[in-house]
Image (cartoon, rainbow, N blue to C red):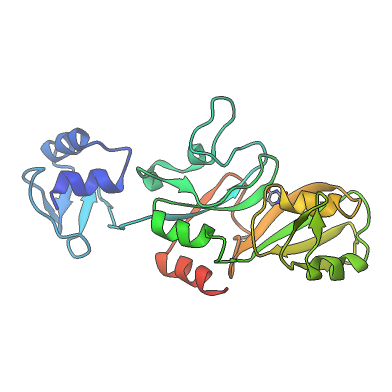
Length: 236
Ligand code: URA
């Protein structure tokens, strides 16, 4: 691949003309030697390319764990509110990056962002049933019978039947965790409405076997490896 294309494909904050200018200034090295021109060929995966001393590791796709704060929307564009894409740092931004699955604007927690459409499709497919676990704070104490009702598949809004879901009630009965194997619109909120309760706070804490990093502050991103995302899909 041409050097300028290689760098621009990995760093959306650098255009191919930016790369050319950096090469002219001697800021780009390939295997330790300053690149003479921007159109030289490099081998992705084996040549070491650095810009201003910082290595540009080649990745075909990026996978990002975001701890979404409340008030941010899971969309690629929104006229009014901040989007999850605006929280991605420049070095992880890519053409075609999007959230693989949505959380409501007021929901916090784990959102997976990627530019790998095929993987996102597998993850979001209704037959994949990747489990998603939520921490829920409720207005009223959760009744222990709700565990069985959700495990049997609760009917919401007088007709829609949910897949069996696992509910755990903590020592404080207003705090529970709920694991879903599907993603109906506002599902957690609607499931508790069906039990005459109300969700006051909602946070997604895991997807598949991948748990939201507890050190990741709201609004911050962490790059995750492709093989770990594959493991996440292997759970179901
Ligand atoms: N269920 C909800 O009600 N909202 C979310 O954001 C996710 C699951």
